[in-house]
Length: 279
Image (cartoon, rainbow, N blue to C red; front, side):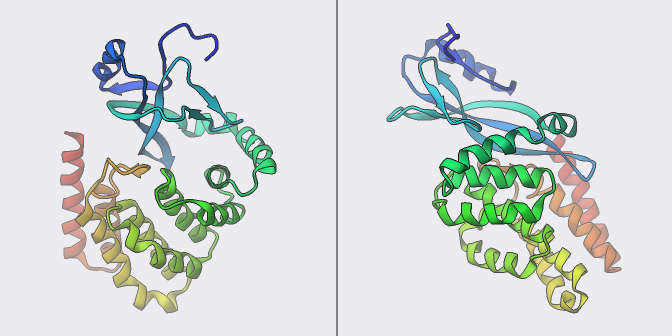
């Protein structure tokens, strides 16, 4: 930032909305520009895109603070949401390998000085989860949840990831208790109900004695995703969890139960939602 001679600086690559960036040449207001970043990641061999809203367009004199996952510090400066979408592929497998260990070491250094910091705990648990170290991630999720305010920008992602890591660590009952407590706050989130359906399915597989009670709840969770629909305004939402991904899960679910008519309905719905999405 010290070496920049431009009025504005930015990161990532532009997917759409370049006019909004160009317009900043004529912007006389000092403000932070918030944009949508689409993160690409590979999940079970398939490309998945999650969207998050981040502060990424900065006046030249604004500075970042922190050793890692730095945040711009600009007391009193307004933040404006821009009609700008950028892409990011840092979570793809070929890039993850080059960064393994680096972020964790930096985050642990920061946490040594600020052990209760909610954002740092969230970032470290996310880092551990990315590399499938779920049992190690859980305590950091728990601490992050304890200290994260209801309106924190990262709380939605923190909640969904907490359910996922608890599930992968085999702590099903704890995950369900957390989901029940948080459910009233996430009625607008397809990601929350998608993660809940996945959690209940894995619990039913791990403990068949619970299956009879869990199966209707699994279906209703993914059906709730379809009722909500995709919500791109939500921070850290995965594209398709309110549409074709939920339909895909319901197709596989009913197929596994031998309910051919229901399975076919959701297979057709998945194809239609994918077609709409591609448009």
